[in-house]
Length: 509
Image (tube, rainbow, N blue to C red; front, side, top):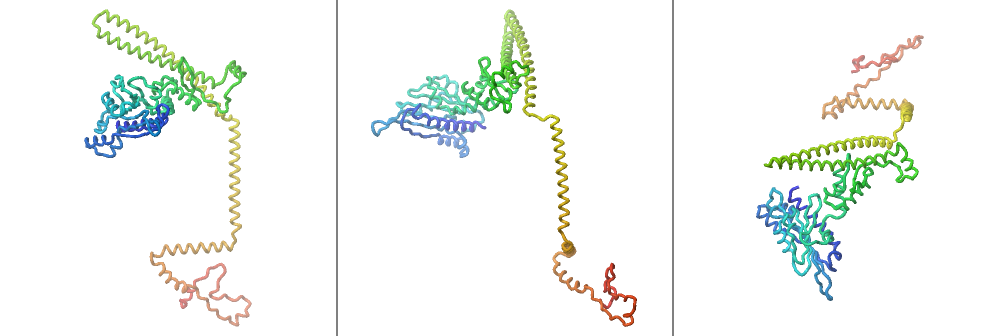
């Protein structure tokens, strides 16, 4: 995201959040009975700057911040029909428009003291009416603004800028301002702050695998108050049953413990507690929680030792530089003795650090083993006898199912054969022969001449029909013979195919 787009997003976020706060502050932090709200911007000035830099583009105009502001005026009734102004609250954005209009590649500069002073004086109208002006700079303010102690008569000035951690820094350069007024110009609500702290915990979830997170670490990363961070940690613990929150050495530690067993009771009686206390085995869940708490404390101590070693090494580098720059032998000898003692201290601290790492490793191994045991208990896997019984039952079920399927298929085949009669079989055979003959005629005929060929073949089929044979009367001599009469020439012989009459009688053709 470019600097201009980021400034535009911050401008929109600030004004949307402060407008909601203005509605809540009516009649409470801001005095008045009647209210009038107006909105202004510097779009005309931004358009002129874009034209000056050769960028008369509407898309660029919509993507850049234009120093928008919201003005809330409060009034109260005076006499019968009159009104009197009770105060003015202004939420304004001040961005370096010249830099964004020129489309410079570098980072946008912060707002300086002279530019801020001129902007506040232009916003303030009637000097008799109290003004509360909150100026937000998406690019931040320079150091001279914070050190100026800027103060205007009858004007309460609040400065708002990004804090670099996703939140906002709300302060006042002049006299002390009421915390309620500062909260009005903070666009990030209480719920949003808690969610941001929870996101910071989620981003640092890798530290919870083998260590812990302290409340101070989250406060340093987010810049949020400790009360907000503590609320976020409590919500995280409620949503994740494996996370635990404990107070050690005056600080709250977040660490990963044992997961809750399914169906376990939330509270344990006194007799059960005494039994677990004198039992060697005890509860694996409580052991994991106790070991995780010890590991969290050890990791915090290890991190502090790391910081101490870094400080000692930095001190050693400084002493070495002083020794090289010193001209006096006595000074160099003193520094050399100091460096030697410092290196011995670093060696001792490293020895303690190695012991801590070994202790953390041993505890982590024990936690890992207990977690595996607990996971096995949660699964409640069947034993070998149950597995064997289930496998045999499944095999028998499959065999029974296969036998039933074979029986059903054989019954269906016999049923189809029994239902079809001989007459239906002959008709079905005739249908199949007709279908095969039509398929053969279509395959042998040229494309586009099928109707003509069928018309020419019709007379040929009529001519090809066999002519009925001419029966001669039987002679009287043969009529009384004992031997059977001879069959006529065209009579069929059982079991022998009929000969083509055209091949025997040439005259018939």
